[in-house]
Structures are given as C-alpha cells and as structure tokens.
Amino acid sequence: MKNLSRNFFLHLSENKLLNRSAKKWGLKLGASKVVAGTTIEAAIPAISQLNHEGLKVTLDHLGEFVTERNEAEEAARACVHTLQTIQSAGVDSQVSVKLTKLGLDIDENLCMENMHHIMQAAAANGNFINIDMEDYSRYDTTLNIVEELRRTYDNVGTVLQSYLYRGLEDLDRFKGVPLRLVKGAYKESPEVAMQDKEAIDANFLRMIQKHLLNGSYTAIATHDHQIIAQIKTFVHENDIPYDRFEFQMLYGFRADMQKQLAEEGYTFRTYVPFGNDWYGYFMRRLAERPQNVAFAVRGLVSK
Ligand code: FDA
Image: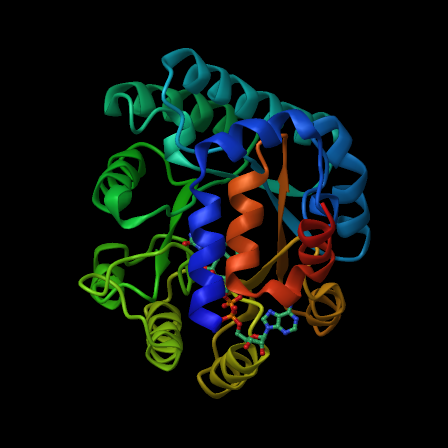
C-alpha cells in the first residue's frame, strides 16, 4: 500500500502538463504550508522568522528539468538575484540549486557557465552553494560538475543519497567536501537503488558516520527522529565537534523538532523552497509520506 501511494505521487510528480498548469495556479492544494512564497521577496519574512528562532536556512528557487536555453539563463540570473536579496535583507541563508534548472539537460557547457556566474556571486558575498542531487540519470554528470567546480571554488558542496548502492563508495571521492546526506527522493530502478527501507536507513547511518569520522563537514538531512537520535549518540561517543555537522529538514515539516534541535545547541538549517514551480517538489513530498501533508491530500480529494 505504502509503495503504491509512493509510486502514485512520484508518477504525478513527473506529469509535465500538470507541472506546467500548476505554475499558473499560485500556491494551491496547501502548498503554501511547505513553500515560503512565489518570489524571493515574498519568502524573506519566513526566513527572518526562522533565523529569529535560531535556525539557519538554505533557499531553493523551485524548478527543474528546463529544456530551453533562455529559461536556464533566466534561472541563473534569478539565483544571483536571490544571493543579492539574501545579502541586502541581512538574513542567514545559503542557496541550493538543481542543475537541470540551470541547463544540464540542454548543454553541459551552458550549465557550467551558469554555475560559474552563480559561484562568483556567492563568493563575492561569502555565501555557500549546495548542488541538490536529482535522479540517477543525472548522477554522474552532477558529480563531475561538482568536482570541476571544486577545483576553483571551495564554497560549493553537493548531496549523496543512501538508497544508491554506490553511495557509500562515492563518499571516498568527496572526502573533505561539505556534503548533505539524504536517503534519496526519486523513483529509481532496483539495479541502482535499494528498495528496502531498512537497508536504506542502515546505509544512511553508515554514510553519515563515515563522512563525520573523515572529518568532513556533514549535513544530516532527515525528518527521521530515530536516525537523529543515533547520530546524537554517535557524535558524543566519538567527540565530533558541533561545528563539523548540522541537521537539516524541509520547511513546514516537524517545526517543533527543528527548533528543539537548535535549542539543544546543534546547528540547524531549514531547506526553504520558494517560486511558482512548486508542483514536482510538492508531489515528491507527498510520495514520501502522504500524512506529512494531510492538508494537501484533503485538497486533492475535494478538488
Ligand atoms: P523518512 O520519510 O524515511 O521517514 C522516516 C521516519 O521518520 C518515519 O517513518 C516517521 O517515523 C518519521 N517522520 C518522517 N517525517 C515525519 C513527520 N513530518 N512527522 C513525524 N514523523 C516523521 N533527496 C534527494 O534525492 N536529493 C536532494 O538533494 C535532497 N535534498 C534534501 C534536503 C533536505 C533538507 C531534506 C530534509 C531532504 C532532502 N531530500 C533530498 C529528500 C530525502 O532524500 C528524503 O526523500 C526525505 O527526506 C524523506 O526521508 P527522511 O529521511 O526525512 O525520513
């Protein structure tokens, strides 16, 4: 049943027609609970509020799978504008990007050029860019681009996913690189990705522990209280300094736990999406755990 609903929402997340239509709807189906606004300006009050509660932020200008050059260039300009707005509003926020929004599927050189613009703007403001990991068909190219960028910039990191069999091994390639570690959000084939939750969780723990023991900065991105509890014990037992890692969760999920972790003295960063291209992001969240966004399920049924 659980896999059925996961596949249903992942399938919906890939529906191009609904994706296009949703851009014109505004934040519907309850999306405003998990998306901070349709523009960066509209999202600033939510970021200030999180900062006020002791939470750092990473901002994601929603959108992915761009197929037109001008859209990819516009996305890069919007990202630079986001960095400038963070600076002028004086909020504590990094930026997360998706390479398919910046032209990865059109031309790798275009994507790289866009990344250089963004990296230069980030470096000028002393900010940090995280490259989100998308589905497996973009995995190798994404890692290659991150490696290439790291030759010039040290303010860039990426994400590794524990559902991939090769996740643990790929950590070796990124020793010393700040990484966000996640379980993985896409529908992947059993040839490349584990399908069993227990195996994914076990690999997730192994990956987090390995990156921490390597002394590499580790962002532990999960809403899973059991994993969080195990990592808390692990860092204490292994004397991992608090400035070597942070916890991350998505905006709108487990807000009380986010605040509590910050109050306990852990660095906490909330991943805050904004923009009108919210549909794919929203459907993936429903796929993970429909009850997370029960308001949306009610919205879907009543519409
Ligand atoms: P999971 O969904 O496995 O839940 C585990 C358990 O935690 C549940 O059984 C329940 O007990 C508890 N739980 C979870 N949510 C709860 C809630 N809201 N309330 C109460 N209990 C709850 N993926 C990707 O492929 N590429 C990426 O770049 C990113 N980036 C990213 C950034 C950030 C900040 C986060 C938090 C996540 C991502 N992800 C991602 C998504 C990630 O891969 C994964 O799909 C989701 O985080 C869901 O898995 P969890 O580890 O959160 O717990």
